[in-house]
Amino acid sequence: MKKITLYSALLLSLVGLSRCDLNVIPTDGLTGQQITTTSDGLPSLVNGCYAIFKDATDNGNNWYLRQYYQLSDFASDDIVCAYKTEDDLINSFRYKDRTPEKSNINSFWAQNYKIIYGANVAIDMANKKGNDPLSNQLKGESYFLRAFATHNLVRLFAKPYSDANKTSPGVILREDLTDNKPKARATLEETYQYIISSLKTAADLMPSDKPAERSGAGFASKEAAWALLSRVYLYQNDWNNAIAYSDSVIGSGLYSLTTAENYANYFVNARNESETIWFIPFLTIDDKREGSIASMIYNGPSCWGEEGVSPSLMEAMGFGTEMQGVDQRWQLIETDNTGEKNGVTLYYVKKFSNQDNSATLSSPVMLRLAEVYLNRAEAYAHLGDVATAVDDLNTLLENRLIPAAGKTIDDYKYIAGSITADQIVDIVLNERRIELAFEGHRIFDLLRNGKDIVRNYWGFHLDTYNGVPASSNPGLTAGGVVFHANDPSDIYPIPVNELSTNKLCVPNQ
View 1 (cartoon, rainbow, N blue to C red):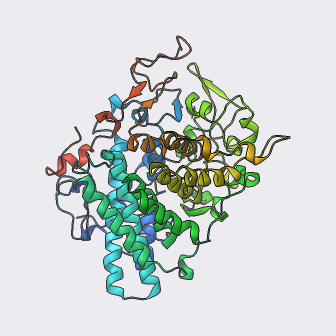
View 2: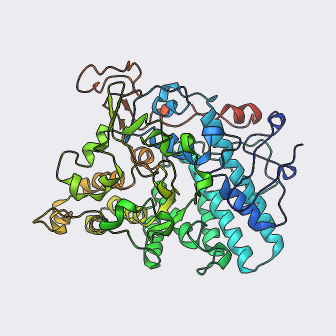
View 3: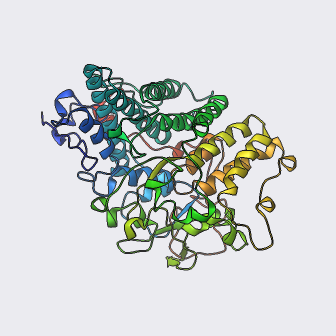
């Protein structure tokens, strides 16, 4: 069996199965013979797991983070598609065209299991090394990474968690480095228990003061585990625990929201910002250019510029109103330098551009304080605590809005007394949509809240769009406009590479 070398320093990654292995090993399970470590040992192994997030050696445009954002955001109502590319990314927009054979689906599935397997090997190695602070930190990071990867899988390849769905298939759980044989999918409840247990273990292992070798937000931390727990519990509808772990992050005092005055530059400088809890560091050498995250949604050098902000999101943000000048989140959308393709006006996105003056370079933020406030706000909203939910929303707005002349911030804040318990969840979801746009949240926020996906605007998400808009909008009955929250097409098919090598794994229906 072909051996695999693990490189260090966050520049290279674990590589996957050789083609000759696919007929005997399921794509979610490697073997101990398929991975070795460098002389740097445990740190190099854990660094190799992080490196998978940005390594494109074997996957071309199907590298991890590009798929992380495209599989989620391109399926939502936040981004419009103006070109019917031959790239498999088009199937994120076109639900009915998704099949188990698509390369991006197979690649993302396999890359997550590489992270999970690498993390399990690192956990085993750390157990053998002892109980020193660095080994515990690295072991905690490994538990965190396997939880993060598993949650990304269950969000995309399984139904949203609910009491009605909790016995439905989740994903395949790999418990340790020996767990690599064909295996059935766990239930949703078992999958979430695995994720939560891994994150709690991670938080317990990682010290409050990280070892100097793992300093900075480029590595996971105790607080990153808490932040991810607040997200996971929100997805599980466990409002009280979502609040508790949000409280832990906010109460740590380690993070602060970027101010409205500085927000336009937040993502360019995210590596050094106090709002950032965990990010993936990219250097100039890591710039993917035509294959970057930005390349499809921006119009700078090396960009395709085939997608842009949807009319639906533009409206939600207050396009054409004073909010374009007040809300600093508009600074990350190109409203002056627009494009047009196939009858679609494109307003480009700058969230993943302009680090080190490159149109295609950024260090993507995976967890930040704004999301934690919004997690807590949504949890309070579901509990009917309007006043506390509004407090969190207003804290965010204080750091995102610059009042127009003659007005104060109070003119833009929510007033709890004018909002009912029936209204507050939708208000929070709208604020989540605006704040977290293009960061991989919107589609899941809709589905887990039982909301339909409505894309009543022209573009190649439509079944029969020919590049010529026929009216102001296609209408709700047009193919590709509305997908209900319980439509089986909402979730991606289990990849063929898994189904063909693991007969215990059932496909999605």
